[in-house]
Length: 291
Image 1: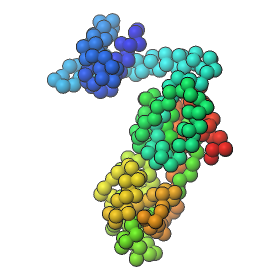
Image 2: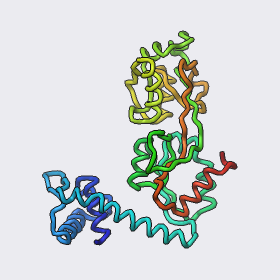
Image 3: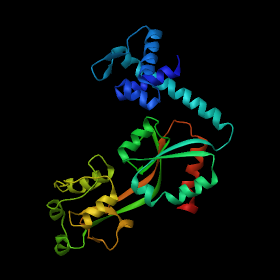
């Protein structure tokens, strides 16, 4: 079975669109349609139901989907193992990272990596923790540098690289400054500026309130910590930010609950063969010299 046909099938299913699949594969919509038609002819079955502006899998398509994924992964892993046997650190290394890690943690590692391994085509994508795990799972990236999720086990392997202490902060003229010592009840009544509810950071903060029967009020979610810091500094609400981000533009408050520490690190698929480039990057980022 031609892997190009299977790849077209997978991408069409992902986007539910022939035109969007063509954009990702860098071929025309008609070329995508031709590949799907060839695959359907080969299997002698219809794989997609065509609608006005989208497509959906038939029963046969649903049956093929996990098998096609396994076939493509097996081919990819075999090619990777053969490439690794050459012992060269080259090729493309796709990495996902959060904006905070990318700005505040990664620069010295990236600088050293590109200096040591100029033959590697390093590609970075910025995304939140939930999306980063999904990108690793679907092999869009080989590594993700993100907040580690203790509930994500089994298919993932992770290394805890940094401990990120979270500090309760508000603007320098915010009313909370005059209400110390603070209580969780007071914070629950005051708008919080936090990442959205799907993020591990939000879930950690929310759990502190949930344990005391309180509901967190976060009306303006954003996943960019620098944006959160700006909104806090102008008095729009309080937040929990990494200790390293606290400066004269915001005021740190006494957090009235158990200390919150985000584990930051690198995530990869446990059973996916590591590329030589990935192995070199992991050795560098785990090196005590750069900790």
